[in-house]
Length: 442
Image (tube, rainbow, N blue to C red; front, side, top):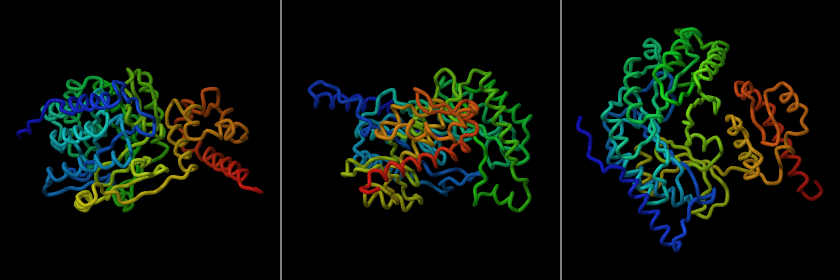
């Protein structure tokens, strides 16, 4: 297969040119870093796959043919439109997800990056991640993506057991995965992440830990552990419902996760989020923005976003979802400049609930300064400092509330869902108390 010729890092040149224009307009004074309301990450959804995996319920399609030039044009148009509507002036990171975005041509990736760099400030060293599957990621193809500006890869390895890969409906083998991983590490040293799944039907703790140990002999500096979630409408869900496969054992999955955390820690990996582990500072800055409740724009069929549409005169952050089906999405983009299908304004309490639930996923937790950016009146001490239930969690060593802020201990991260059953109602109660005092006669 002949790869299309693309300009080497054209988006970097576009970014530098745009920066010079901004500086000229500001009489030599750079306008960046921009205020928080003008910064965002960008997620680009490529919806197509070679086949649907047995566990996957993501918005993806297996087409007979893709008119890539038309899809590319719409991705570029929607990115430009949403940047304008949001008023975002600085793009912190870009993530090409899917679907299988490594099936797209490097020319499509280049076109999107150059359009973003012309519409906003995209730093030349911004993290640009591409999700890749082993069977669609030959070394020459990965190199071409690197040439157009991708500087980080996330490889959907999922398992190093061929029988498990077949169960999951993956198109690659364990040897394919390790070969792709080696090529990726050569091309993107220190910038390659791999996913490993746990909690599959029939999976046992010992063999799974053996896979993890094998992975550690080959992997780079970032590993993500994901527990299988049986989703209605998937082939795997149907097999379990029909009794042809046993249901995953949640206790075994918890044991795998806990043992896996220990193995990774002993290998020098730091758990910086519930499912993510890094060494040598190789954390995902794009995902970190999600966990910090930063703004992000979702571009492409079914993409999700969270941003304040200040470029369109908005005053409230919105949760947005783009039209799911690719052909309908493209029609809407051609008509309106974007294919936003759903807009939901987020109330102040809803946003604080997201700040709490997302922030506690990280080892940093929620600092007092970070919380005050979203709620300057009601402090973390006000919300959680006098609660008997929260005090019990503190005494159990699962949670910490101190001068730094609110965060889970290492033990607490493993049971975050159960902690939120206490913390979210306490936040809601404190919010209700506060708002009732602001109502005359309340």
